[in-house]
Length: 319
Image 1 (cartoon, rainbow, N blue to C red):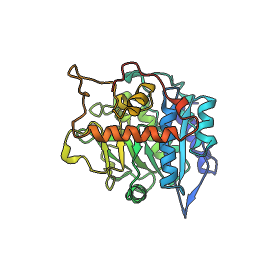
Image 2 (cartoon, rainbow, N blue to C red; image 1 turned 120 degrees about the vertical axis):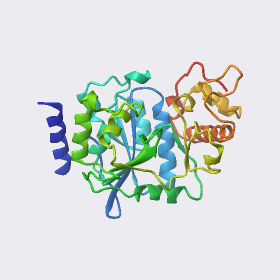
Image 3 (tube, helix red, strand yellow; image 1 turned 90 degrees about the vertical axis):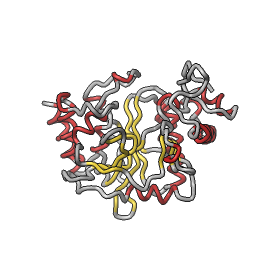
Image 4 (tube, rainbow, N blue to C red; image 1 turned 180 degrees about the vertical axis):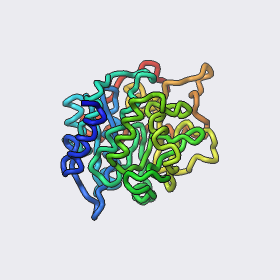
């Protein structure tokens, strides 16, 4: 049976009341809503998921938190699920496609890795990358509520707003934070495009973004009412004084033993450095916010049983 046919049968089972393995159906009032993350393999992402889940549990305890997982250790499962941080759901597409979950180089990351977000049994899903640090403030809960109130097109519809997401270079959808409606038709369109590289949008670089931008071309809306900043933001005037969320890039993700030592010394950490000892790609006005976010991340991790065991070594990381 062709992959597309298998995916449709899987979605038919969900629509009939089943679910991806492990997926619960929790409601907030009459709406089924969930935060979602994705982690696979053994790359330190467990610690990132634990910290993000802990902050969400405090800030918004009434909404579901769903972690799509593939090939993670029993210890990681216990840390994520045992403490009630996340409901664990097996990402079936990783198994069907025989994905190498240990691939680390940029070109080898599977472009369909977020496919199963559109098969989750919820009306609305807010997806966040694991290298996002939520910074608790008086406005965080209201802004999280605002994400779920983002104007989305009807499920399966083809109009603008089928996905609400961050905007990156040009007119490209950035999948680091997305608000989406799971739906069989969208799942099918994503899988069909995934299997036809000629349809990918090459002008939108990123692990999965060539596929996502091809499917949602003209059908997505930029994310608003989200006080968010990336550490690579260079315009000081666009950096909020008190952001709700700071998005590390891979080389500044804090879940390394080397960065723990930097944070303990009150210094920021990254794995990019100029010969003049400045941190490459990070503006001077961002440096204190990045340092504070990394210190906050480590404070969260230190308070969570098993979080420290999920960090990894990163040769080359410097303070």
